[in-house]
Amino acid sequence: MELIKFDAKRCSLCGKCVEKCPFGALSFEDNGIVVGDTCRMCGMCVRQCPEKAISFEQKAGSFDKDKWKDFLIFVEQECGDIHPVAFELIGEARKMASKVNFKVKCVIAGGAGTIENAHKLLDYGVDQVFAYEDESLEGFRADCYTDVVAECIAAQKPSSVLIGATALGRSLAPRLATRFHTGLTADCTTLDIKSNTDMVQIRPAFGGNIMAQISITKSRPQFATVRYRVMDAAQKVESTKGEVIVCSVKEEMKQSPIEILKSEVIEKTKNIEDEDVLVVAGRGVRNEKDVEMCEELAKALGGQLAFTRPMIENGFGDVAHQVGLSGRTVRPKLIITCGVSGAIQFTSCMTGSECIVAINNDPEAQIFNVAHYCIVDDLYKVVPYLTELVKEQKGDE
Image (cartoon, rainbow, N blue to C red; front, side):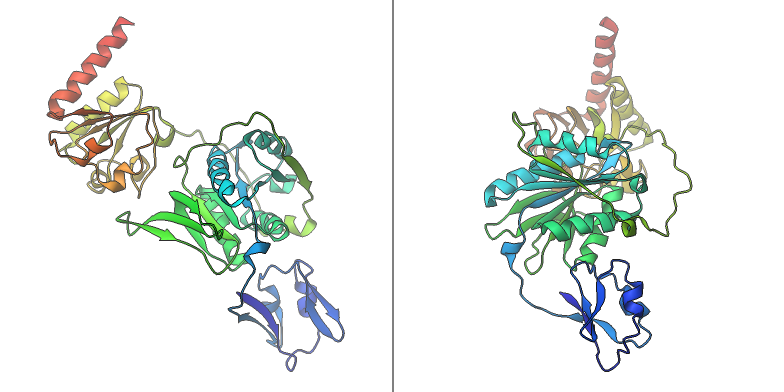
């Protein structure tokens, strides 16, 4: 870990560092400067010292794991609502917490309605929710949110911090990990915990060709961002025992050089992660006309067309419509794969689907190992037949 080190021979006690510290962590005491508990290792004092008397010192000291307990989940809000990834994080944290007798806590920050949303989290078995509500947090400003969540982490000392791997989460998590000089595992697809409270974090690496198993053993807290739609969402509990703790947003937390001049809600197209029905085109689909054939089936079913990675690389679609470790994880009610071989990079991101129908003319295709219904036939016969069948069925209705 890193510590602030003062060179007494160089320090002139000018007080510049005390004056410039944004968190009031430095003070004069006994003819010297003392670093308080509110220090966040931001480095402002190092940069401001005219005598270059302050530096970061790397120290491989030991730490007491017993002082770092429980799970803390950052709850993201989107357009005033709780982002659904938060419920998946709560569900996974509750599973792990039961193994090591930890509590599950949440921190939520934002503008009006944040405290109201905090109370909703108690229905999902959360023990404590720390709510920071202030108009200055209405829009996401990375520095302000980092200060707010860092204060909560410093006070609670959680063993692990879970954050959704959304655009906001991917901006916030590395800032927090840097602030606490600890490790971060990004885009996790699987989480578990050992009896010694070290988390086992599994994520795709090298373009999804391998699954890396990572543990943070020499520092706390452990940070992990988790992909949306990978894990089961927490279910509501019959009786709630948790509490909401309303926290004040200090003035220094509101200060930011970032100014939000204008914001507007852009109408989003439905992501493949949110679709109930998907038709996936794999390498068995040879050209653009054949892709249109698969898309026609998807439209007939009221769903979307998606692709495997090779199809994206060949220019048939964009990465927003890619299913796989280097794309999106999906859990629709129905997924129909057309000419998909079934590599682990693909199947690991769709096996949570309620019904999997696989069409492939190779009876040994790996996709049949995870499919609920297997059709060993030419997709150029099966897909048009299914499309007409669906259209006829809809016509009868």
